[in-house]
Image (cartoon, rainbow, N blue to C red; front, side):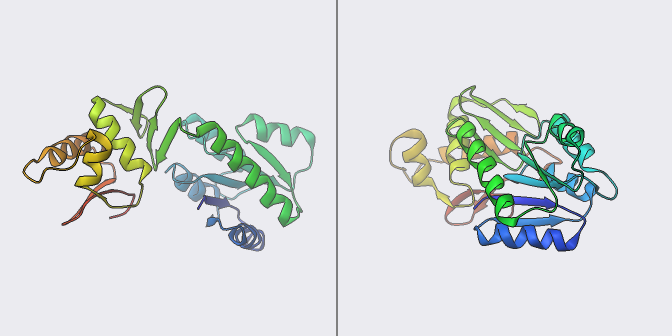
Length: 226
């Protein structure tokens, strides 16, 4: 299920966006002003953002410019009552991926969202994995957390890749052994726990919310929540 953030100060418009996208099976959250929207968007946990051009506390152009300056590449659909061509150009140049003028048909808005999501899926397919601010670039064999490069050993990289592909699910020691090491788990070894411990120290550094969790009696889970 794609997660979408709607940054919109008008409640009626926000409800329209949430209802329409919700009917398409998307999980939609709402932020009612620019500053709150930016703070949520910086988490990197959303697959797409709908962004109103005119917002209290921080306008849409500033929000999208700040996101791009901080290397958050989440697709952004700019939505605005400003119809001037220059306004649309400004929105796209600031970092928006598409621009929709108010008033809009809900069906067209949903269609534009689906197009942007398909475009993102094609560009990311089998090349990048993301969970919150954790990113794994499979082509470059590069891992980052909150923009900082993680110094991972090859086995740690494979271990993190497997856990990210199974985001939100408990992975047992046997599953990790078979997928990462290629053989069945031997109960007398603690190799899984040792590698998870090393990986956790690199991924969940002080000051960052933990992503790797121990599921007592079962195994481990990579998730944004405990």
